[in-house]
Length: 199
Ligand SMILES: [Mg+2]
Ligand SMILES: [Zn+2]
Image 1 (cartoon, helix red, strand yellow):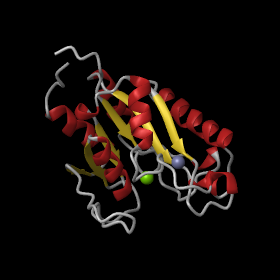
Image 2 (spheres, rainbow, N blue to C red):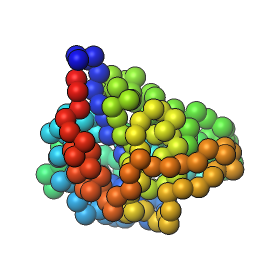
Image 3 (cartoon, rainbow, N blue to C red):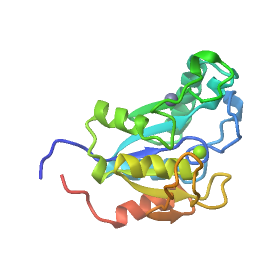
Image 4 (cartoon, helix red, strand yellow):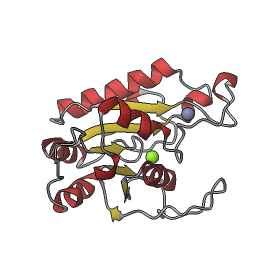
């Protein structure tokens, strides 16, 4: 008891918080998914840090710069808060891609999911206990990143992906979620059903 570290819920952005429109580059395309506001309020109330971790290939493709991603993040948060959600604790994104058209982003980085770099950085910056934390995502890569960071993982069906289990080419590890949910609200209720996290 009393580790001083908080649990977190790591959240993918597109397909979990907002509708996945493939390549989100304009604030007019932001649509908050149903149940998200209530889910975030429930998790925050229960003591979870809320940390968004998102691959943003729009940057690697030259469709949006990093400042543009920050503008969209701020807009997502503003809309959530206006609807009654608590402020989020942090936004992290990976701008890289091994085949990026913008050369400065063309690299095999540690932050692009399915690698766990973003979660590890966020955990360090926010004092997170990964073993009591969860990763919620709509893609197998989200689940792998969560597993590798030592979190429990939840697959939600609000994205565009048919099944949570794949074998990635880069790695034969299977992404097998700890739980499958319709949406983030159901995921939050499942986390609540596990009981209070021990501090
Ligand atoms: Mg997604
Ligand atoms: Zn990266």
